[in-house]
Amino acid sequence: MWPLSGTGLRFRRYRFSRSRFALLSFRLAFTLQATDWPQFLGPARDGSTADPIGDSWPSDGAPTVWEARVGEGFSSPVVAEGTAFLFHRRGDKEQVGAWAAATGVERWTASFPTDYSDDQGSGDGPKSTPAVAGGRLFALSPSGVLRALSIRDGARLWEVDLVRRFEAVRGFFGFATSPLVVGDRVVVQVGGPGASTVAFAAADGRVLWKSGSDEAGYGSPVPWVREGRTRVLAFNRSGAVAHDLEDGREVFRFPWRSRMHASVNAAAPRVDSTGLFLTASYGTGAAWIRPDGASGSVVWSGDDILSAHFATPVEWEGFLYGFHGRHESGPSFRCVDRATGKVRWSVEDVGSGSVVRVGGQLLVLSESGEMRVFVANPERAVERTRFQACGTGARMVPAVSEGLLWVRDRSRLTCRRLPVPTAKP
Figure 1 (cartoon, rainbow, N blue to C red):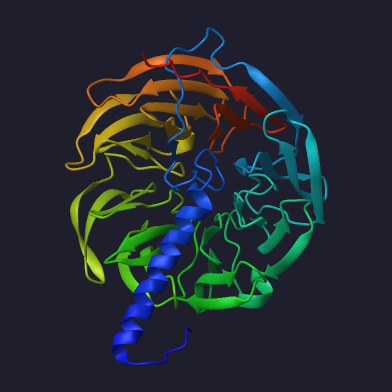
Figure 2: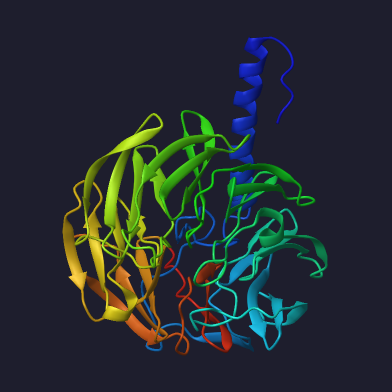
């Protein structure tokens, strides 16, 4: 895709600089304003933020700052450049709403007609979480329309219908993958023939590359830097597949999927310089994988360790914290040693939900709307507080930015104030 001019030496330098530029662009897009929560799973796409909060919680947990009435959906809130955004549905319209993050003053609403109906009756609202970067918001509808909007006023900049363009199949619950922005491109798990993963130009929606023919599933892609190059790792229905960010070439594949078709791979993979962690339910289980060239080897695996139905686990100092088991069967919340796969502790009464990490604290939100705060302690489960953060139906990932917490239920977006860190002497 890129010009191949000059000597081989110059070409190698050019490719290296492009990779370094892409990685730098990703860091700038999502860490320049270090306290933003601009995409699914936060600034680093790993369910965490470096925002400091206090460890002394008030009796009511976290007081409400503002609330807004919203429509249905499981899309998570995102926060960027002083604005909170939510993708939701009211009646026959999909809407992206924008509110002043600190006050809740509505800034704009963008509406688009829809006739989408969920095949499984799990709700007709959006399940994909938007991404904000470069003055644009990228949102994927459950019917498969990818749109770019201006964050200034919600004006539609471009859109692509994935079903018409790529013959993508929407799956049991519609399109649910959350777009990933890296540098000047938006990467989406599409799931069409020859277009399992597609990179679009953020500026105008042009297709920069498309690759693979795996079904998309419900996972979301993450960036993965290996050997000095930026990859995009997708956890689709077949397993983990990595593509080169520049041209989409498949550079890594590791099969990891359920034996039954009526299943989902939904939790995002976790990656670092030493390996990757995959987790799924439906008898598949979890695995820590050490990459080796175009594939890898299993360090440990098992279906009785940390099999997440849809919620992505978080990590702190070498330990994984997340939900184990099917959401309808009463999962447990666990701590697992990443190096060995040993379960260090398990709490059985949390229910199904999601988790984000803020420093060394774990904010665990159940579908009932109850928030429980645990210390990221591998020795034992230490609970600091619990409170009702929102109503029922809270199957989303909370957002944290500048000492504020955003959660949503079936009808409300709620902003709450987190405890302030104690000043050090």
